[in-house]
Amino acid sequence: MVLETISRIIKHQLPAYLKKLPLPETIGGFARLTVSEWLRLLPLLGILALLGYLTIRPFLPKKKKQRDSLINLKIQKENPKVVNEIDIEDLNSANVCYCRCWRSKTFPVCDKSHLKHNELTGDNVGPLILKKKIL
Image (cartoon, rainbow, N blue to C red; front, side, top):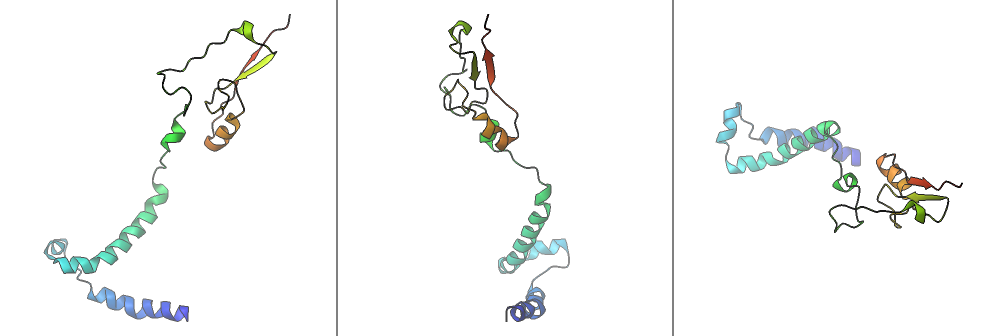
């Protein structure tokens, strides 16, 4: 039933539709078409435009999302530049990891948010690890 309907459309209705279209013989003939003739051409032109777009779409450059290109999304956005100073003498443990991906919920301390960031973006950022020398 479905194939019969499709067959009828392709074999009978489509050729009849195409025969009735006001296609001019020359390019200049398009300028002489009336508004009603242009309206009859719109479905065909729309389908041709869609097919053309779908054909070239794989070759179009991929657009980067603006959100992915920003590094700092929310940390101290009110400041023109974010700077954190920590005295090495104040380190309480032997190793301290500081965030460099700006995604940490405990910024400036690393919470390993860079793992998800790296997976999503293909980046290779990791923490800054400060080690306290034990004398």
